[in-house]
Image (cartoon, rainbow, N blue to C red):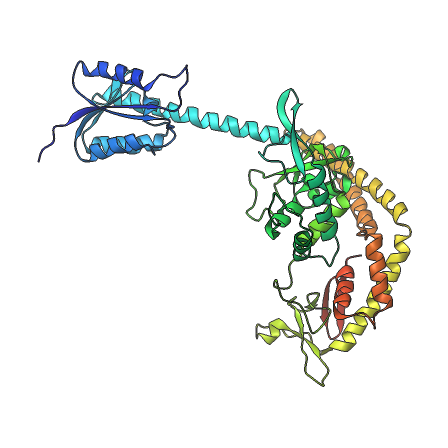
Length: 502
């Protein structure tokens, strides 16, 4: 059965505006091309031209595939599509079914060679215009990020939004929500304690009837909140942490005065594991006041960054060193074996699974635990002596951190001058950079020697109690003491290496 092929008009309007031509006006322009002939009209109202997902347009394409369409007439090229890929696909379809295409206002049709050439040129420029607009929007967003504008819709939990003006631009500023801000402070204070888990915090909030956005708090919410530097005081400690993690820091070190919070934006080349890796993310000092000290925030962040040793819901039962002790050869965990009426041993899990490790040798569990306990006593004693000089040490540490930031800034400025420099300037810059780099290494070493992870007075009191009453405290308290003092232990039968938290 043969169909009588007909002319079709297609009209589209995204939104009703005074400065946009109505669908009815588009149809009138198109009918002029028919010179009184009959036609079928397809019209989509309220649909964008960025793609072809429009009901009437899809019906038109269906009619073309059935061979019912002779010619398609539009008011303007962009009524069909703004995408060169979509339009190229349609042109192939038109050619396959011998369908002509006419643009009323642009005065060309594809029945002529000139019309086909002009059509291709116009669609290229339409796509170029759209991509240019998108780039301008993206660049504007990126620029606003660098200036510390609030870019998301809802304020993070603990804050509420108030209108403000930054550099003559209307935006919103975050201010503390009196009730929610106290909840945030409590979350950070609890998690900063070495022995506190997500489960401990969520259970406490549930028992106290504290709701988050009128719902029970879940661990995923808590995890994201504790990672967010929007709550942390932007001081030199925070500056050094993000710099060491590879984040791009917009502000100078001198701006980190310890009052405001920070925004952390995803960079253009951010990694998928952005929660763990900060490389290429962008840190900007925000205009709002922080809720949490940098010390508390960093304790939480470092705790989050540490590898989880145990599966959720499982607790160690054979040794209070579980999760801390690793094989000195391969780095796999050492597992404490327990045999009734017999001495237990630590064994390498990799060797046990026949994966090629020579093993850690014979390490008796009771003797090793006593050795580690003695080491903990000595380390804590040294720490208490050092802690008495903490204020003096921290002042010196801050001075070194300021100097380090200044030296690194000088190096960066000199590196910028190397592009296009002549031989004389190049030699001078290289010599100066070497001198500054030597100074940088000296300062970094001094900072490392002075950097002592601070412990709250409450934690010191707890650790002191645990160590003084070791024989009478229970298994869980011994584990808490080890967790407060030790990061990891690498051991063989003849060598022990302890990485301390203090």
